[in-house]
Image 1 (cartoon, one colour):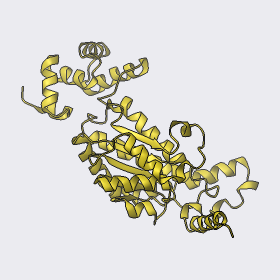
Image 2 (cartoon, one colour; image 1 turned 45 degrees about the vertical axis):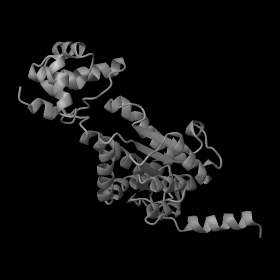
Image 3 (tube, helix red, strand yellow; image 1 turned 90 degrees about the horizontal axis):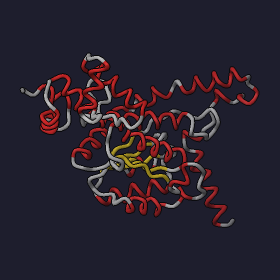
Image 4 (tube, helix red, strand yellow; image 1 turned 180 degrees about the vertical axis):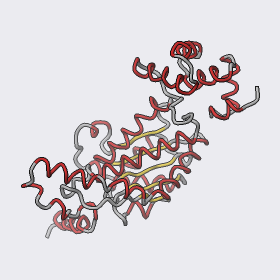
Length: 311
């Protein structure tokens, strides 16, 4: 038997042990179901995902605290993965600047195969652990950063290479997989492993597993950004009003936060050059722009703290 065949059979045996690769008894007859029943089966399976995420909340909390600590020290959050896992990391990272007004590069998404892999499967890219190391070196990844390796199976070489490199540098490492026991969970400081069970279509981990990953990634960035002052109440006060829709949203946010009129909100935003957080502070406290900027700086950018400061 050739080495290639032996390697393939070893991989098949390894995949057979993964929960995410199992066959789902609830969808064995899905190929003869009506459209209604196919959709009902998918929806029933999807409904189990939030409970799986809930069971790993302590690990998610630990990861958020580590990310907040990194942000407060000028560090970054870096995701790396292959295929669906990589695309979800890139998606989450790309949405942080417009949502929270943070600079591009504060949250980074790396995918095996680079940008072309976002649109088209890149054969073999995930199998090269050295590429994971090279991609981290290319962004000057350091001990100040946090690396989240995302891989449903927990065995992707690209992610394993990256996690090992990050650990060697002394950075905090997080593993996000959908199997209870995995290689990346053993490597990482923090293991987040929501076990959603077999997919409706065997091995199609873009479904429940991908949904679980997306929920966790949402939590990691949203909770971390809230913790560093990117919200006031439940409003996105560091929103980057870069287009007409977002400018309209900015006006609504100022109105909701201050109970002012649309005209007053628009005037406050014009005065502050569309800085939503500063516009709210000026509107609520009567401070001028310069004094408001000083108050926010003294409060570490946290709007509640700036509002509560004595005049």
